[in-house]
Image 1 (tube, rainbow, N blue to C red):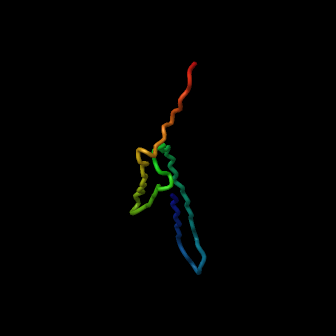
Image 2: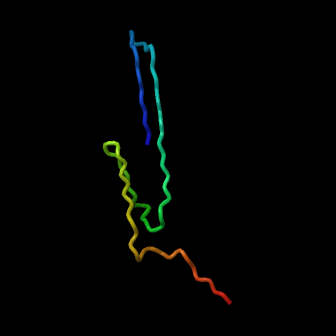
Image 3: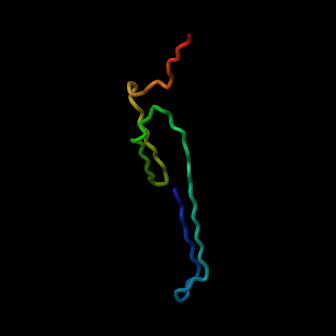
Length: 72
């Protein structure tokens, strides 16, 4: 998400006496579990509120993370 602003003071014959610019970036990182559908993640901003929709996979689609090891 980015925030940009511009402030102007005093305009005389098309020339500015003072002009300020500001640019700020916001970034948030999240670690997601393996039981979600990564292709179906949606996000939108409304009235300054960020909504993130994350769909879970069905139980039968989840593969176990472990593996079998033979011990002799």
